[in-house]
Amino acid sequence: MTIIAISNLKGGTGKTTSAVLLATAFYRAGNSVTVVDLDPQGSATEWAQMAEKAGQPLPFPVTLGNVRTTKNIKENTDYTILDCPPGDPRLIDAAIGVADLVVVPVQPSGIETERMWDTVDIAGKDKAIVLLTSVLIQAKSTTALSDALAEEGVRVFRGAIPRREEIRHWYGHSPHGQLHGYESIAQQIKEARHD
Ligand SMILES: Nc1ncnc2c1ncn2[C@@H]1O[C@H](COP(=O)(O)OP(=O)(O)OP(=O)(O)O)[C@@H](O)[C@H]1O
Ligand SMILES: [Mg+2]
Image (cartoon, rainbow, N blue to C red; front, side):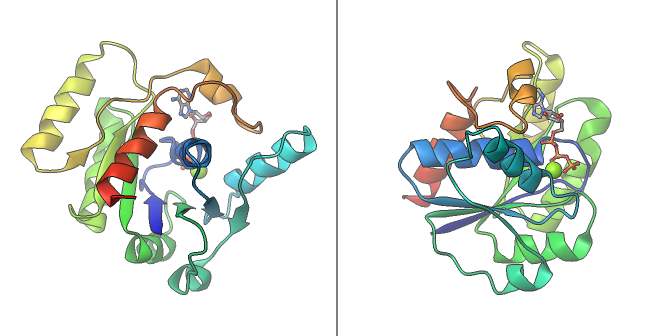
């Protein structure tokens, strides 16, 4: 059983999207998975509710969590994915504390990356793995960031998630068809955990 926190101190970096799509990839690979919504904004919860109303519910539970439930988390699925809020240190600390792995989604362009380094510091290099996302094809900034992360000894997933309108439109729906690279991210996590 593996607990994955999805965290970046910066808002709007693709945390909730990554939580739901990664969970979908694990589910399709035959694993049981739960998403825990730690964000008071409730985006993951709203996503699940909208999908249910549309008649195509997400194929895994999305539950609400807080600092207390996180500290006492009970793992009853192969993967538990904690969707963290951007700016609540107590929640983020609690999530990182119980997590086996901290996925840090980041758009690899200038100002977007600043808070990523702080997030990696808080998580520590043993737990943190950076996920390059919303990437524009052939952007030089992607290679530059990958090089900077390698130089600092920070792990990064192989392959980046592209920026796609389809991904944006999946909010509130059960994703269908290919997951634009989240399948490979799930596979890399499974390999790293020997699951
Ligand atoms: N790969 C992608 N391609 C296109 N749009 C994307 C991609 N990933 C995320 N988005 C869009 O970017 C916006 C922010 O994504 P998301 O809500 O997942 O970020 P977040 O980090 O959870 O935000 P918050 O910090 O507010 O919780 C959303 O509109 C989402 O649909
Ligand atoms: Mg979010």
